[in-house]
Length: 123
Ligand code: HEC
Image (cartoon, helix red, strand yellow):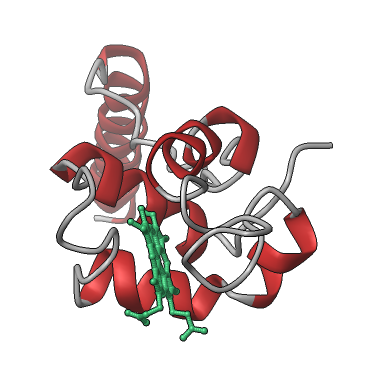
């Protein structure tokens, strides 16, 4: 009787081991996707997006002697006005003023993205 039990245990054990080996050897399922967090703002600088828009569509008025307040050719002025710029140009869309060439969707999105990424300037 003892012998039979031992045989059963050994057989079961062998099956379990064989099964687990089989899984390791033949498990060809895709490894779980590794999600590496990407900082989407890493390369978002004034110089590589927003600048050309501000120069083309804002600076005409927003510079020394222009009709709009603030000199947008100066980075410190832009930094001080980021929230207002977002409000007027991206949220309300009341800038540029009605008489001036307007921003297209891509330009609005580029400004929004730059400001939402903390309005960084290039290194
Ligand atoms: C045709 C001239 C003109 C252009 C172009 C223009 N602005 Fe203005 N902007 C003004 C004037 C005039 C005012 C002041 C009157 C007002 O607030 O509407 C003003 C006001 C603002 C204000 C509010 C300032 C404050 O202190 O309250 C912001 C922000 C602003 N503009 C951003 C922009 C941005 C960003 C652009 C480009 C996308 C732009 N403007 C293009 C003439 C212009």
